[in-house]
Image 1 (cartoon, one colour):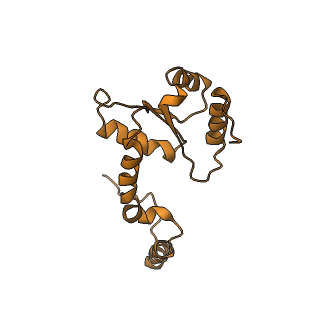
Image 2 (spheres, rainbow, N blue to C red):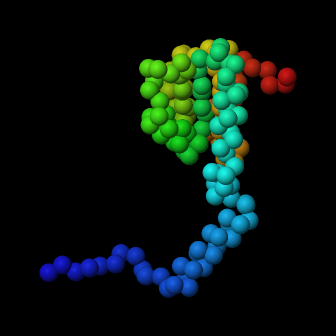
Image 3 (tube, rainbow, N blue to C red):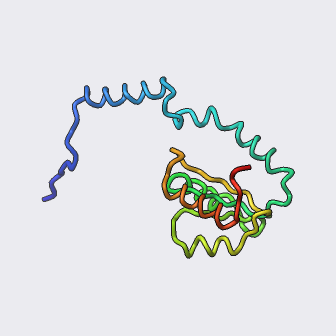
Length: 144
């Protein structure tokens, strides 16, 4: 005979309600931006298209990001774009492997590339480290 077993402890309705209230409070406060992405980011598509429109010299887009900063882009690329028909190549630096870093840099020229450095906090150590390696590789003077 089969027994039905609950693997999670059942919660009281007041516990569930308190979590729901907390989420509603977060939405109303505006402190957590992803609740409002659909309302606030649609105009970014038009801005992005306008930005890249006159950049015919850009052949490569290099995204530097870890975790969620790169996973969404990978999913969209794999789902939406036929790489054979795309006039630009997307490179994603999402790990600190010197092998993948060097292989990527062998394929690109600085003057033909747009770099997107993405970090939710701005201090993700892997992203900062890759950014510093890019500065060093291309001998960029960041004082300008």
